[in-house]
Length: 80
Image 1: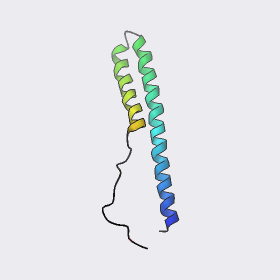
Image 2: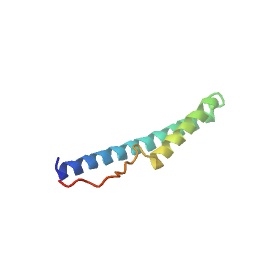
Image 3: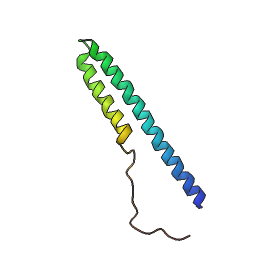
């Protein structure tokens, strides 16, 4: 594997993580709006509160969470 292929794979992984976080942010916002809309009605309020909270947690994960754990190598890289 050459350096270009390795770099390309890292760029694709980073782009995938970024897209995942953007989708989580948008889904969290949508769930919060749905939860708020359900909370307007007294009948749907018991369901609206959990939906809104799930939306909040998904939104926060999209902003601050990691989709993968960072792996730090404890060994030095091998020369090619």
